[in-house]
Structures are given as structure tokens and as C-alpha cells.
Image (cartoon, rainbow, N blue to C red):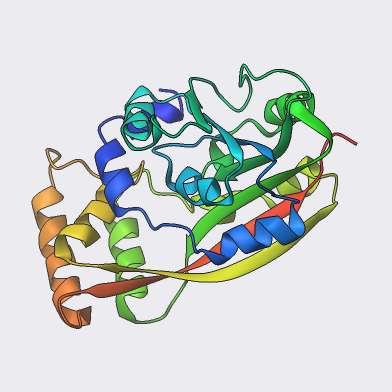
Length: 252
């Protein structure tokens, strides 16, 4: 199974229940990655368009490159009528974009699925001289108590394919090698308020989640319900994140 096929039948949950990106990310990209209304941006592994929705607030011209058909269809439903946004079938290793055509490449919650060597070659090919690459992750904050602690415990306990996904699942040397050790690192605070359905949907959006038809899901659901009851305030729980951002140039 290819990396993008792991999200088949998870796309609706992904779109509804994954955390959005903080508005301060746009300011960061303007100040550190030269994002302007005149920029031509490629969002690689764009999924259902969560990062794209924020990028379009800059009024840039945006290409959303996504190999998963289900995710592209949702992105088309949301963004297909936006004149400065094009949604195309492609991968990080073969975007199908013209050479030297892109000012800024972004990847939200996606780079850990890329082949670092081949994607670096492709990014170098499509970037204009001096173009930047911004890799972004919403990473759950580690905690010794509260909803973040209980969520992590449940995921580890019930998901046999669970791994430390996102930036924490990438060896430091891969990031250093990708940027030739020339990058800047930033962290932004982020959070997500969820009702019980949202908490379960957040779990089900993950590539490693048990499906609702698998043995053990009923027990997992009960344990999520109990964790929700222990941590809810006003009918919601809060998951805390750090939005981690790497910005730099490649292909030197």
C-alpha cells in the first residue's frame, strides 16, 4: 500500500477533525519565506486543503498537489471555484509542475510521507532561484496529565501501526540533509476544541487508527468516552499542539 492510500476511507474525518493551522503562520511565511500576493506557491501533499485554505488568504496563486483521489475530491468541493487555486494529481517526487515555476513550496503534515532524496530533486527542479521550502506540522504537545496525555495513551494502546508520526517521526539528520543544514525553525501555539464526536473523529482521521469495523473498536470507543468525561469542560475537551515550521532553501 502506498503512503497516500493509507488515508482511503479517512478523508472525511481528516477534513472535519484535523486541527487547522494558526493564523500567525501566514505572517511567519510572509516575514520568513517571502510569501506575497504575487507569489506562486505549490502546496505538496495538500490533502483536503487544510493548509491551502490558509495560504489562499495571502491571495497568492496556489497549486495543490495531492495523489489521493478522495482527498482531492474534497479539496475540489471546497476550493474548486477559487480562481487562483488549481488542484492537481501528483506526488512530492513527481509534481508535474513546470521547471523553475514556483516561488514557495509548502508541505503541511506531509513531509514524513515523502522520499527525502527524490522530493528534494523535484523541489529543486520546480523552484525558481532563491525559492523557499516550508515544512509544517501540527504536533500534539506531550503531557503527563489531561486530555493530551490520555489521547496519547489510548492511541498507543489500541493502534498497532502507531508510530511517532509527523516531525517527531523523522530522524533529525533527514531534515538537516534536506536543507543542507541551512534552515530556520519556528514554533507556534495551537489548540483544538472537540466534542465527543470530534474527539473520535480526530482519532479516526489518522493513518494508524482502528477502523470502526475492526475488533476492539467498541472497547476503544468506550475508553475514549470515559477519557472525554474525565477531561471535558462545557461539552468540549482541548487538545494542545505546537505548529512546528522549518523554512529554508534547498538544492545548493
